[in-house]
Image (spheres, rainbow, N blue to C red):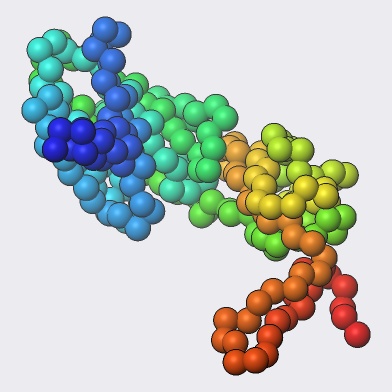
Length: 239
């Protein structure tokens, strides 16, 4: 049972809870990946205990290391909205910085230096303000050469990266951009650079490129017959 237990423990501790110790550097990074709907979570481990609580616009993260020596804690926290009203560390106002090149959602970084004694508690509280973060909207299915129109809402379009070379002829400004799918069929991901409020980040845009017309099977077939459908993946009307 050792291998499955180790994999599960790593998925929970390093993945979901995002705890990554680096004792040679005297630091522990806590970068949680909790689902957006979670308002509390807690974990107890022989080397540390931690908890997360969300009450309204205030997120509070507590970590108490139990390592043999004092360590600093680097908090990397996902943004809930586009403005930070306040950040405190152990009840005192504290500086923070946005994580450069964050992907998916903006993130902030708060560093808590190693305390004077081992086992001291680090508590970070973030009060959120401003507006909800925008998520790009678009048609997830396209055909080669057709226009893919992406609306970035309240976030400002700053640029785009296309690692799979899946689109061409991109132009945009303000709150969106327009591009065209290439002839490469299948699922592709482009990354849109957005700016809103206090943050800038990269938002993935997933789109499937299909032929303009497809013949697809029908789930229910009758004996001695063959049923199929013609699916129009383009913006052109079939007469």
